Image 1 (cartoon, rainbow, N blue to C red):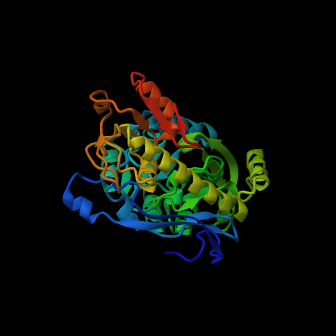
Image 2 (cartoon, rainbow, N blue to C red):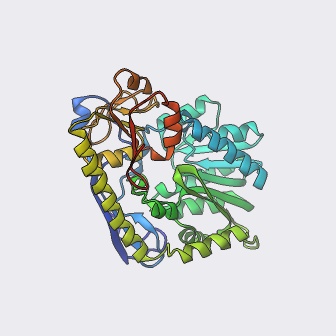
Image 3 (tube, rainbow, N blue to C red):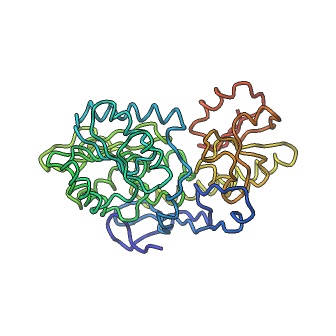
Length: 399
């Protein structure tokens, strides 16, 4: 486990939330006794840096364990397909790049629309099975880490580039400096880094502890990101909040020191100061609220399960956190449309994951939705269901 902050190197770190030993959020198991026996749980403490304000997970599971055989293909989710098509247009309209490099590119969900718009694209992702999917689409995608070595390889192919981007993957990394050094060496003198990251402000506003799992090592606000960038020759020139993952921060950082920050950056930083997002008291209060939220959900649904049948809907990382933190071994099934998950078992509780069609065979009394950020889409899709929906965030509700 780390003993220093990933942004500033300080050892002045304070525990704000301890989620105990948890299985890997994406560790969906084949239905076999051997897989169940070999499953491991890992500590999951969340700390706050008293020096720079970064909220972070200090316990690091090796990236090859987490991502080599990954069970998340972005293109299976229509909402994400639409998001990345729009994001590609946004990048082209705002920055007009000729070359875009994406690290953590998954199955090419962003690279494909960029390529269709005439941009030269190269992707990098550590997941072997996912990069095979991307290459099957005719995309230039490399399997591995984005570091200075791969940056030099890319530079030898296409020279210095206009834009480097990563969506909801930058915070997954233990060595943030290595990525930023690679970025700085690969971008041209007027190049830009575009990132989408889960936003610490959104987490705090709606008690989103359920996205705090082993993949996600860092929880950034703009102030902590800017602190990190300044240490590596970058600075933020644009910032905005987007609805992805129930509230993400989208930024553009520049290499050119003469490029000025827009009003959007100054405004958001001022708001973060006002909301005390880099204050220890804010995050200690968050920890207390999260523990209360978990306990309420745990007791309420456990009592319901004594006289009612309950299923879950949405086998994502959030689901792993909820079913394990609340000991939901009473769930009969969890519904998910992804072929990478359906037919497998949930981490920890080993609840069977089934396709949505299974719901109509023998509908339960209640459906618990850990994918609460998609509740409107899910309820519209399953409008035939006449039972009761249950969402846990920002507070436990029955619909």
